[in-house]
Length: 180
Image (tube, rainbow, N blue to C red; front, side, top):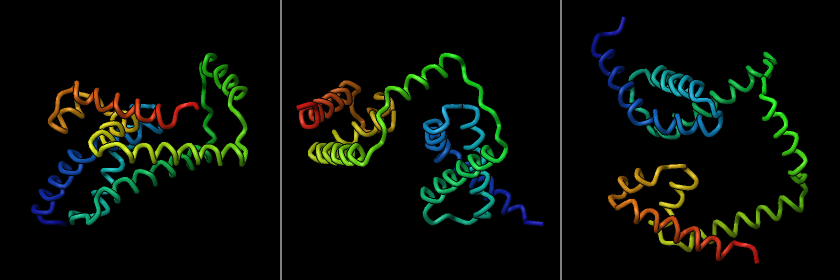
């Protein structure tokens, strides 16, 4: 049996991991699963696995370790779902939307992949041309789906300043990468 000191450090570790990683893990899972209750369950499972794995010791590269655990958990879940063959039920509207999407989406051809890679390279280059603050704000808002008020609080600026940075980035990208 472990001494009481380890139980306290395990509780501290749990609290620290929860405070630091709960929100980012929820966001990570919600982007992939679109089911809040499942995302909450997976977040708790990741934190539990990390606590068990480290046994109260410090983790050297915590960010990497936690999100690698999250990715592995998603893979495990996908494998279990495939093995079980659990049916998924769709609303009629969703089923019809899927059929329509199949008709509207172009086939993935080598030419299309190459064009997409070129377009992505152009967008990344255009993002590099922006100032660091504008680029970071745009990425947080558009790619990480962070709220403008939270970005403003993070950088200690007003929400209208955040809006101006986002608009500046959008205008720059539209000018550089928009239709010619």
